[in-house]
Image (cartoon, rainbow, N blue to C red; front, side):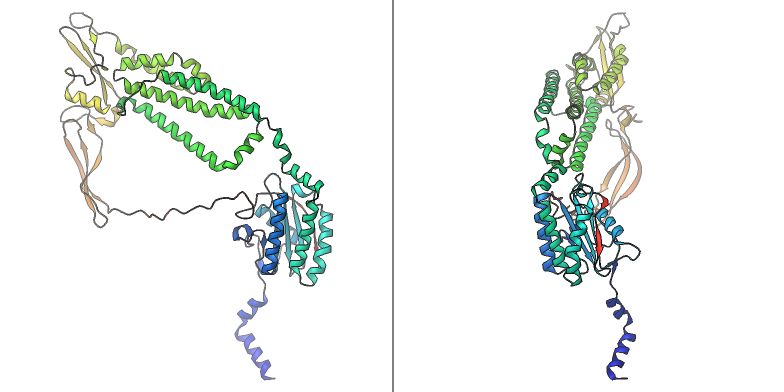
Length: 496
């Protein structure tokens, strides 16, 4: 045996793994096949380098030009081999569906799949192109351009010639008209924008009049908020916050670019109904805001009830704009019924009718309320009615909005004893723990009840770089992702 043959045999036995890896071609699965949109290769997936860089650039230019003229999406997938148990048709069909080649609804996608080791090619067309590109036509194009070029190893040339032929065919005037119908471009002028604008302007006008009426009955208040209004403020804040989040979610999901198309897909009644529902929430929040303003402007509960009754006299026709207000009217009606007996005049020990002090004029209750009672009112725990006659006075307390947030103080016996809270004794730093105590404190007399001492953890810095910039979607299909098209399996294939 010659020295050359001995060396070859030694290399074969010493480096079997390396020799085998070069001999074997990778058999791609659907999940392993690189999407050209995700890898930045535009339209051509060429993982094994079957096509030269120049051929890939030429194909990308051809496809981009065709898409600019016809809006058709074309994907080209060229590979040496794919998973053994799959046939070219099923593999290409599943690849088309995974990528979603073509525009959504128009389904105007075309996939060309080529496997050089198996010497097979396959076209897959979307639903919308099955009439424009029949299977028989694709078969003729493939046999005419692919077979001779591929047998000679000219994969880029054969592929480009076939796509140029398809592009020329689709750009013919008769086919362009059919493509425009496929994309729905012939319906641009058919949408009745004027009736839609007129009807929605009428809806907006009615709501504007309602909001104006509510505004007239809403008092102006100072920036300092009364504790009594906390219920209305919370309801208004939660409702407005929820509506804003809903609007943001809809904008994110639908996207700004699809708003016009949404209008076109719905009739005039549906568009007006959506606007009505949206404005009904706005009207509800404006009504709650008005109740909150009335509450803040009236420390006196009787004056507040009177002002609410004045507002609600016109609320019956508010219900036309927002039926949701009915729920608030029922709640307010029940509250006023329960408190009706509270404002009936009392009599003193001489059976003389007593007068009720107007708390709008005497807001702090001096000299009738003690400092503890004044503190309870300031905290929103209790509300006091003051009744006076020539020789007597009576003070009656009623639970306020913050009644459940405090307990009776064991020292001063007023309901100003806070629930458990943490008070720092030694503030923590970024290097050292701190010290604190869990206590209950009376907001009136300052009595403090120690529950336990605790350790306050070291301060931690937040990661400023935790946020990542999101990639923006592009309306053009030359980057980002395909349009979400679907296929019924139409197309053609062959061998060479």
